[in-house]
Image (cartoon, rainbow, N blue to C red; front, side):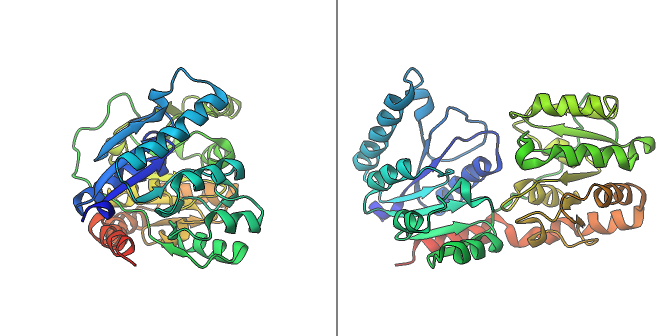
Amino acid sequence: MKNNNKIAIVSTSLGVGGAERFAGLLSMMLHDLGYEVHHIIILDYVDYEYKGALVNLGKLFADEKGIIRAVKKGKYIANYLSENDIQTIIDNRSRPTVTRELVTKWIYGNRKVYYFFHSSNLEMYLTNSVFWAKYIFGNANKLVCVSKAIEQKLQHNYQFTNTKTIYNPIVFPEIIHNKPIAIPEKYILFFGRLEEEVKNFTLLLQAFSKSKVYEKETKLLIIGDGSSKDFIVEKIKALQTENQVQVLPFQSSVLPYIQSAKCTILTSHFEGFPMSIIESLAAGIPVISVDCETGPKEIIQDKVNGLLVPNDDKKALAEAIKTMIEDENLYQICRKNAQKSVEHLSLTTISQQWKNLLEEQ
């Protein structure tokens, strides 16, 4: 293969979030399948492992501002794709602006393009106008969704027919015996972006406080960076749980913290196919999650590999936290089933699905 062996993955960055972590994993899968991978990232954040060439537009145009920077980035992408004879693009960004995406559509030209949808909040990716959404994305090779519920929403709300669900893959980790230092002896873990409008830390902190599991020496550990860090710190103070909740910055290797946790927790208003859940289960750690739109109910089997509770229900979540800590029999059942519940998401399985998709005529 020549031209069709080259793939550009266009992402916001390679740092901080689940979509960005996925981009790194995708590059590894495609590289191992024999593709020549080119990462094009808009912002200068590189925390996750990846394979292939890296085009860091955030670093290249760090001194430019506003519309001039946007224009220069666009021209650079167009020239780079042309000069490297790249004919296949996987667009992993959020895409809420019609004008920008019309320009992007022109830059991509007649190449094969696959657009990714990581969240059920479609406004992060599409205009509310069905006409413009179909004009921009209707001729894409595929709109790839990370959950079946997102695919169904695209089909129902926009009448798209060029859709496909491919779940996020997971790497099954080795056991790490060294527990991180300066963390609680026993804790429930949240890790991810610190964004209240998505992750609903109000619910998390209120339910944890209400559960009173800290009276059983179980604390809450929050790991991540984001715009809501100060909000979270103030909420912890307001609930008078400063001694029960610890906040750490983003960790490039969060695995030791996952493997040392009693369980992990997710309280989002909405999701796509949350990497934090599958990473926890792959590490053999049960999960407590709200049944938000979308993702958790396609992964978690209630009382089998974790606990699934109604979304935004403080009382139900507090009870789930208490149950996971106090019901040792249930906990051991969930822990025993954790890894095998996500075996269908192995890199080998998901890689083959990508290979089949990319080779479709």
